[in-house]
Amino acid sequence: MDVLELARTQFAVTGSLHFLFVVLTLGLAPLVAIMHTRWAISGRPLHEGMTRFWGQIYVVNYALGIVTGLVMEFQFGLSWAGLSHYAGDVFGAPLAMETLLAFFLESTFLGLWIFGWGRLPRLLHLACIWLVALTAYASAFFIMIANSFLQNPAGTVERGGRLELVDWGALVANKAFVFSFPHVVGAGLFTGAMVMVGASAYHLRRRTPDAEFFTRSLRTGVVMAAVGIMITVAFGYAQFAGVQEDKFSAKTWAAVPLGFMIEFGQLLALVVLFVMLPMIGVLHRWRWTHPLLIIMTPVPFVLAVLGWLAREVGRQPWMIWGKLTVADALSPGLTPGMVTASLIGFTAVLGLLAIVDYALIARMVRRGPRDLALGAPAADAPRSPALSL
Amino acid sequence: MDVIWFAVFALLLAGYFALEGFDLGVGLLLPVLGRSRDRRDRMVAAMAPYVLANEVWLVALAGTLFGVYPLLEGPVLFGLYPVVVAMLLCWIVRDTGLWFRRRLGGPRWRAFWDGLVWLGSLGLAYGWGPALHGAATGSPLHPLGLMLGVVTTLLMAFHGWTFLAWRAPALTGTARPGRALLVSAVVAALPALAVIALSAPHLLDHTTPGTTLNVLSLMVLPFAPVMLGAQVWVWRTFRPGEDAPRTPSFF
Image 1 (cartoon, each protein chain N blue to C red):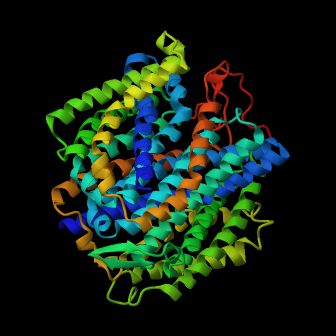
Image 2 (tube, rainbow over the protein chains, first blue to last red; image 1 turned 90 degrees about the vertical axis):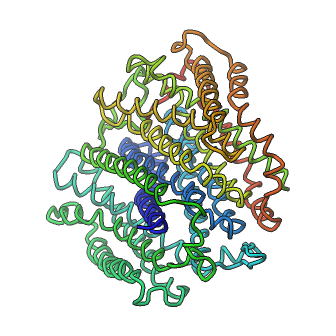
Image 3 (tube, rainbow over the protein chains, first blue to last red; image 1 turned 30 degrees about the vertical axis):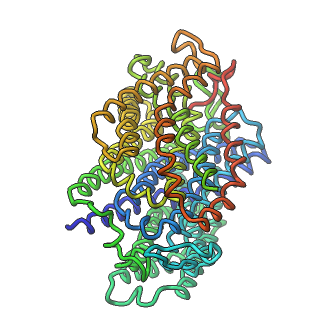
């Protein structure tokens, strides 16, 4: 492989890994916030248990979201210095806003939510998780603005060999952004909801003692999955109104992941809307459906990555559509040796950590809502039962 | 406006050293002060509530570099390629070490991730020497930069020790007041402050044009009180006191 292919591979591998964790973060953040709200209102141990159980899965997933995101942020400077040289005055602004307005606050409020358990007043603690959810979506908002600018450089003019920002409003009203952002939001909600459905089905199938806990989780999951998949499909098709000419023509292989995503996405939409949603009252009793629900859990993740592959591969050979090619965006002086070394390092370390993270999440799901670390009092404080049903 | 954004940039860099500096310092001191598992747990628990709010200063710094100094972002990061990659890997293992160390019960599991927290903290603390020197001069693997790494490592270890003496004096054997922590924070930030002061003219020369800067200012500056307020809230919530050791430690 030449240096361009290596750098693209590095971006594709780390970007796909990043989104696997981000898509679940986006879905679980509002779900956990809703559960926490129920708990704050009712004060019931059942709702506390749901907040802590799903909250713990949320934060353990979040860990890999952070560390893969760090690589994404610095990779622009490492491999793609040509992009900031040509268009940094435009592309840098939404990325700066993402770090300052979204992630800075998200990380700070998440720390307060995790470690403020039992210390913060009830409503302020609740406010923290809603602020985490809000800033997570602000993050997605700014990142999608930046990505949509690459797809369609609206609101800019070229002057002296560089792109200049002339109209921030046009960047936000970008036809490549307005439908893709809700599409991503819907996909996140759908993925988070399907993880809830799959994990609940596992416990209901095994007849573990937490039947009420997982029946309620299953229902919440099914409702949110229906909402999520409707948003995803509607805004998925709407995007074709603003797609670049020739993007998915036969000459690029971007049409392949796109086709798979649409076929399986539609199938899932039919299953969720016309089978799972009408059966919501009996789904927890119909144990023969549970293995199917468990098997469906990873599918939204695969579809989400296919969606990104279609969007990004379809952009080739352009880094910025019609303006700058990926070859010209490469850092001048980048050697295959440099990228090979960092590609191996990032792939090995992040790949191993991702496997460990998923193994930990699977283990937490299997153990169910007992002995939860999130929100547990410190070791030397008097212990109360983690959950009493 | 470009002076305001330079001040923001300098504040983020100095803030990172003053805040994340003590997290890295505590990580460095794990094998020194934390010879038993219980002591390591208490060291990590002391810094845990601050870590998420501290490390994010560097993320914000990198974002500001991209938004405000786009012409420098590429050359600076690319010029430091091996250093940046190594530091990112260290950051990754330090963070996951903290997130994972208590997720399974076994002593060897926890010792393994504690080792990675130490290794990651060491790599990051040391890497700042070549990184700061390289960012200022353009040569990442200069002997001066390598020596500066020893200085940043020692300063952060000192800062970490002062932090523990302030928040969990039982671990250090001596107590230090908040004033001492403030002093060690300034000391830990000195190398960064020196570099930013030397680079000020160069940075100001490369500020992004007015249109972009105005958009950034309009979007970001109104939220600056919220950002600072959130940070202050962290420090108010987790200040030391009778119930500080009972803060739940997820890490």
